[in-house]
Structures are given as structure tokens and as C-alpha cells.
Amino acid sequence: MTALTPDENKSNQYLTFTLRDEDFAIDIAKVREVLDVTTMTKIPQMPSFISGVINLRGNVVPVLDLGCRLGMDPVVPTKNTCVMIVETTIDEHVVSMGTVADSVQMVLDLQASEIEEVPRMGTNINTDFINGMGRQGEKFLVILNIDKVLSQGGEDLALCLDLNPALASDPATQAAEGATAAV
Image 1 (cartoon, rainbow, N blue to C red):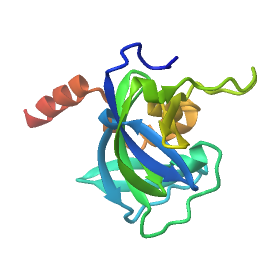
Image 2: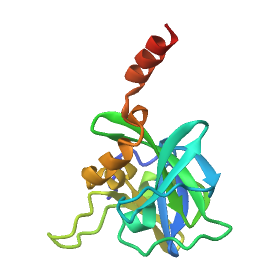
Image 3: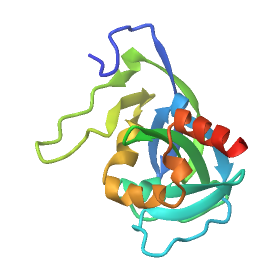
Image 4: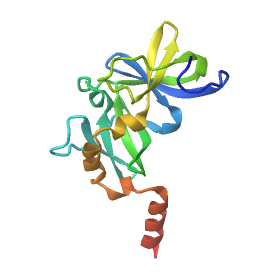
């Protein structure tokens, strides 16, 4: 039995990456681009999982250490460390955020039959941020629901969004603001 869809022939594409030697994946449709790690500006009094902000084509984009966000140790940057720019919805606003990963692996097609349900881990353990477990040979990779990973603890992320109000605007609001600014 699968977790995502009853259509056994449907193919889903996922970007696979590693966090602290563990394999993860997110829906490729959520990923806007993958960048080499660049200079990040640290913001005082931010939660430990917020690495800082970067300048992405003139926009301030908050960057989170995805491993820290999931309760792992902080990233130790290497030549493979990268920033995945993902688009997520927080409080009904579309937001671009950077997420630091130890390395990005590949885009992988997974059939629904290759995705297992999230295992039961007890009543006190929250697994809402996991969409399923993808089978890759003898190994599993954790398929994250990036929207839920990034929206948990909304107060911390609200601090990031306050850095630049345009980050928290929906596309219609951004278009209206742009039209107003052009007048």
C-alpha cells in the first residue's frame, strides 16, 4: 500500500539530497534553483536553524539549515554544500526560502509503488512533515513535505519574513505593489 496516490503508474519527480549522511527528497516542483553556498549575512537573535540571509538577484532571502530544522547537528560546510531555493506557502503567502543541504544528489523518478507509507512511531512523535519513504535499492530516502518542515514553529519563520515584507506577499499583491510603484 502506498501513501501518495493509488495510481501505480504515476511517476513523481523528486530532488534527492543528503543531510548529515542521511538521504532525503522533496518534490521537484517546490525547488526553484540550487546554488553554491555564498556569503550569508548573519542576523542577530535568530533561532539556531536560521543560517542568515543571502542576496538573490537583489532580494533578501532567508536561509535555513535544513538539518538543524529537523533536529540534527549544524551543517559543516564542504565543497558539496549547497543552498536549495524552495518555494513554500506560509500563512497563505508564497515565500522563497533557502535551505542548506550537505549535498544535492539527483532528480529521481519514483513510481507510487516505490513509496511506502510513513511508519508508525508512537503517538507522541510528529511525522506530519514526512510524505513517505522512497525505496532506492536496499535503502530508503525520507520524502519531506517541505511546506510543513518550513512552516512548523511559525513564529521563528515570521521573524525571517519580517526582514523583507515582499518575501511574504502573494504574487497578486507583489504585482499590485509593482504596478503602484511604477505609477
